[in-house]
Length: 469
Image (cartoon, rainbow, N blue to C red; front, top):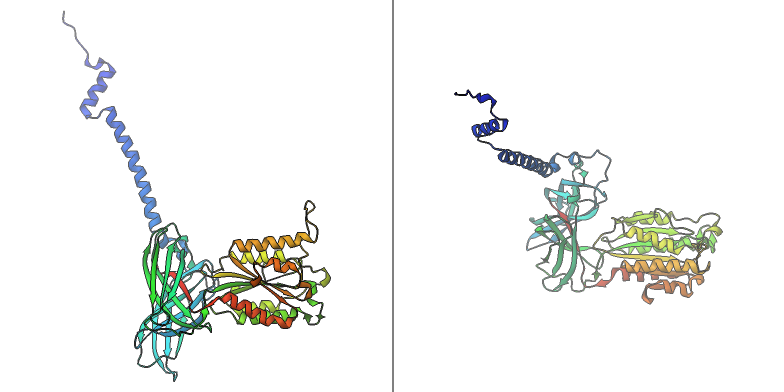
């Protein structure tokens, strides 16, 4: 007997097999498609993020101009024309941007050049980067004139488009191994430039300036390094076609100097109105500043039972500002309660030396003046040292830290109370210790210190770098 078979009653597994054959897609293929879709999604997100960060700088809010009045104007310290080749000149302006976290990507500027009769020869306009918190140069040239230039002026546009600094825009170029040679023939400077950042840096401008014994710039040269990769070092040479004065004696390296001045009660034992010897000390310290060059920076901290906090004056190229801070030093009342904490004075000055205001290519100097031994701070209860020995040891420890950080310490002892062994021991060498029996001796001592700070030699350069992009 023939049986009827209902196809619709076939097993489910069989129906799925028929469906897979009809669609041509099995389970393994479906899984592959799912995995590939997930991978494609991840790649899309990564690509989108990469594109975002690639164009972030142009669209980020920090690129907008900062409000007027929130930043200080760049300080033009000098501007000059230097002979280049026959009949041509290089125009240079030496400038400080005191703003620590703001820059200008394109700052319009104008050089105006005049002859001996104060007749305008030419006006040259351009634009430059203003890097944050550093000295830099604006260099134009070579430029030819019909007559010899006698005076140059420089100015920026009235309103500059300041903006906040991105990490990759900070100048992380280190300059080392400067060599100045052939002074009497064809002067040349060689130096190593190192990229200390974690990213490559392109378009690095380097300007070398030479100074004479009167701290006057006598020559300048410029080059551009197209790119330095992470950690890469390159050596560059700067040349001049004609010799400098063979007798030129100029500072070997610019210096950042902190003056540390005692304002303890004994600094008015000779006279209360005006306080003496403090008044004479202040005048001698201001005279010392006059001996520094326009490439140097200076600051000041005074101390008694404690040092000034913050320091009386941060490191600055405006030496007149430091003089004003020196004039403002006063002795607390009652003056007999104002003791001598030399350690705190040294430590406060070291803190300033570690700040961003310290120029990386300069030498660091501390010039300490005191009229006696250290009497503060007092020892803690668990100290093995006496009240007399503990403050001395604290000062010696601070001086040792200065030496470890390659900061040159000069110690000036004023008056008979400073004639003992303590201040001699505080100085790193006999050449760094000076004894002034009276304030009349201070001017000569400060001049000796200034000469030592200058490290006089027959050649000196200052190399300024900035990133042009």
